[in-house]
Length: 217
Length: 217
Image (cartoon, rainbow over all chains, first blue to last red; front, side, top):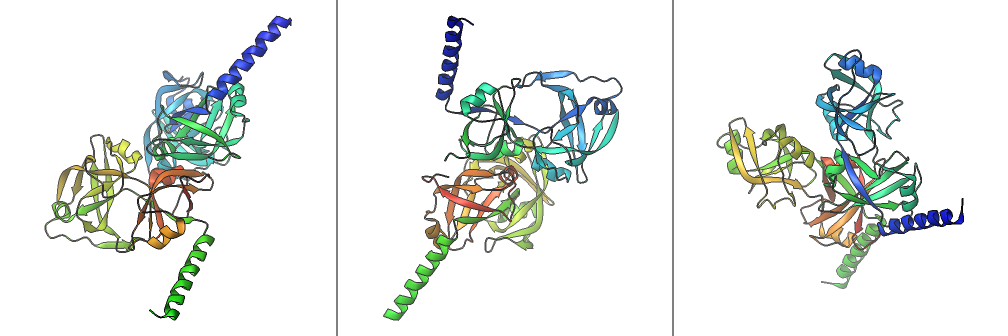
């Protein structure tokens, strides 16, 4: 690599770091309503053999989409209809609800990182062509921040680290134990569920301020 | 007053202050589910002439009780059944719901201190003997702490002041703009609604830590 190219790269890095420090550790927020991810097998059991999800809208995380399809989920105390299916199909079926939903369903899902469903709560799924009793797969999603390695450098955090996020406004709230998830596929965004959103009047237009645990607020 | 009496009073004051500082600013929490307070006129319109509430259980605040009676509340998008009536009857009818409830009802109540219902949201109330359209009275209750003047002295706060409350645990949360309400009739207790409770896995067994706004966490 010639001297000129190295100089250009160094300048680009410095520029990005400078921009980052000006950002004041602001994180765009997104609110996740109850939803489910289905494995290919479970999708077919609920919607019919060979069924493929159809896209309703792209989600902010690249490649992810809200499908036109929805299902009913049922617990011992109640049910929730029109639970949105997200695509594409995954290896494991996972249903994400709020604690408020859990009370209505009569279930006790654990607070978990997405993908960590081992030993989570059972739930019944009902689709237009069948129903399924899943022994596990029901969770309350832990608040988390998607980011790239660049963002992680900017915020001085690591993948798997927990941070606090302060959201100001009419009903100010600070959420603790917010998980940092780093991947080149991600776009900077914090995901909270509807309970967290409603407790802080958080919407898709809100911004959070990331605070490392050793810092004071 | 004799010297002996004055000495006794001073000792009692010092003792209580010493106990207070040992408390570490801990506040017991209570979770308020959706409920309503009815005026005498509205109670009769919904339950029949001359109707009186019957007590199901005492509440933690002295004199307040959960009645056996419940009503249905209805908004443009949906309804909620079995909304508990609290007694005794008040001067003004007031219905307190969560933001989650508001979405189900299709209404937009403001975040308000209890009793401040002027210009709040309209709501329809349905009882066994009648129904009512209230032009105002629907609110989301602002998180608040009931306390006596002794507690206020202990926490170094004043009636009407806003504070932050930190609740540790599996899903740690800090609630901001928590209102201090001081009265000799009160018992020390922080009231949150079900959204705030669910966002922080707060139950009636939780404790919060009161933080003044000028302090760091």
